[in-house]
Image 1 (cartoon, rainbow, N blue to C red):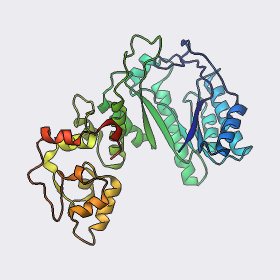
Image 2 (cartoon, one colour):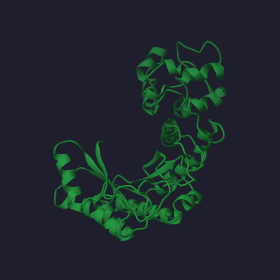
Image 3 (cartoon, helix red, strand yellow):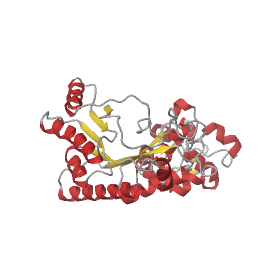
Image 4 (cartoon, rainbow, N blue to C red):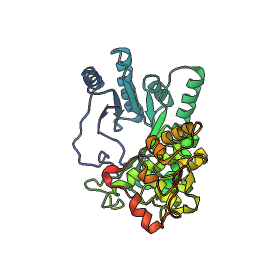
Length: 349
């Protein structure tokens, strides 16, 4: 979905160490009026440049004032302009619950940034923000969304999401994924977004001098996908790397398979869905196609090739009616380079 992603303003009362728009930053400041955002959104939407609006903001005057202005943008778009596109509002956890309730009436999705994966990091790098306040706001939003769904009324129908900054502190990927799993479980989040930390001018001495590898962000998204759709636990995914960090040279599912070679190869004609979902190179849709097709025939390797994205990647891990790997699963040292992906080929299984 193509979205107009803008800040209402980059003024901010908070002084978060990792943010370019922090109070003590020298960055040039600017601010949209409510009517300017409405006009810009409608104009782009009518020209088919965008399908919706993603609106965030620095905190100006107070959390309540800022949240009120953002909600007013959504309200005017819906009620005065008849805007039928998608609206995502980045809400402010310190704002009044009533204002967030109002925002949910007009937005398709609401989100509250967790910012950092631990309360300790938040206290160190964003002392004006409180992990308990953020968790409380997420919990209230989760309740409102569930109540609205039960009552069949409109309130943030696309649910809620959050964003976590990666690499601004020493948190491991294992800890990040454990946090994400808890957010999905406790607050019914639709997505956790991982944003790689980018060094900023005149940064605090407690921040790293270099950003994390870009592949780390991608690997976290792939690992997150495994948690949500492939039945993996955070412990399983994290254990596939070293020292709590995901491997960068291979995707998390392949890394897990390399550390659990005794579970392969699996028979494409008899293995259950859970076992097939753990085969590197098989996505959820491919697995469902395989399960449907094998009700009518025993699948050969060519059949699997038609149902999956690439049969070459599957060869060490699968048994078909006419195929078995010539030996046991190849030695880890030999197989790993075959599973490595070039940066341009990174994808979600």
